[in-house]
Length: 230
Image (cartoon, rainbow, N blue to C red):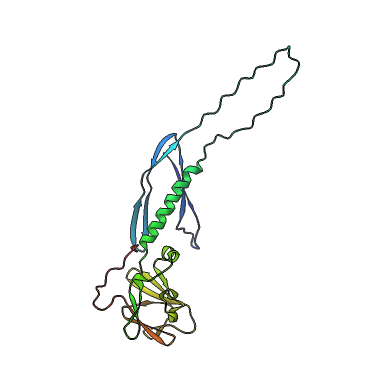
């Protein structure tokens, strides 16, 4: 038995948070088993993660018995000064219990976030139908793959003309975003203002060149986009 307290690490503009510290305070001494069960709804999908059983040992330390002081006999003239002993705090540091629980909760939240993200898929061909980019095997930095698994920057494709463009993968949808004013970016001859959804075989025009986005190559079976599978 005990009490849990959830402390948000950082709040967004709308007052929500994605990471929390979990603090647990047992109410009685003894062995307390704890299992963390985390339910999450993200992007219309429900996720459930259950941690291994944690066993906490809570004890109350006994106070030291006061030492008996023998009064000096009347025959002793010299008095010995008594030096007061310093107080020793015997309070058990409950924060030590909360630290591993908070780390486990943080790891679970990061794991669920990773699993809920759509992994990049599809290809980019040039006008000669030559494949220039395979989003499924594109080389990216470890930090980008960890914190932004479903987003690919145009600079990561290795194509200079796509710099300043962002590809966002969400389920079966692929969105292209551009905040550039010049040169403009066009999808199927329509200028991109903010963001636009890419269909299979959509043509992307920029810097005087055309690129064809394909969700699958000719003859390839289009699979459902994966979540959390690197």
